[in-house]
Length: 169
Image 1: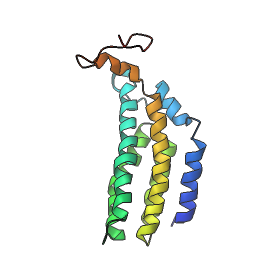
Image 2 (image 1 turned 90 degrees about the vertical axis):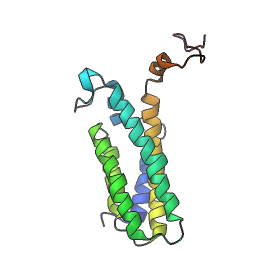
Image 3 (image 1 turned 60 degrees about the horizontal axis):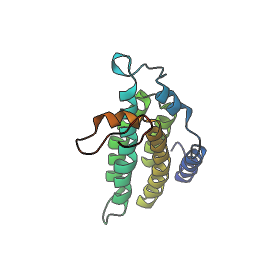
């Protein structure tokens, strides 16, 4: 095992706390469009931010959340949960890496590795809850970097528009 569940939980808590009030540099780089991979079609970098936001949201609010819920389901077994983690969470690490979120990708892969070695459902739940805390914070920072003002140009009829100062008119 790369590390124990206790060590991984402690690490995920430390990583979450480290970015609680300080945007991770890799997210700042993504938000500035300075990704070393140059992702984004035709020279733009909005879509990578959109896709990174979606990947972080779906990992925290759907995939990891469902794994935590499944841990409480009567009769669930560790090998089934480990298969879900390996297939569904493992894929998200690749997305994070594509967007230049190398550190986040590393921690997601570490979660998958440690989850693959647990013996008890309760260990997996504790590990998953710690990872949710970290990934939720990553999502908060990507969401904060997203240029939501751009979306005001796509308002449905009857919802009004916002002016340059953000005021509805």
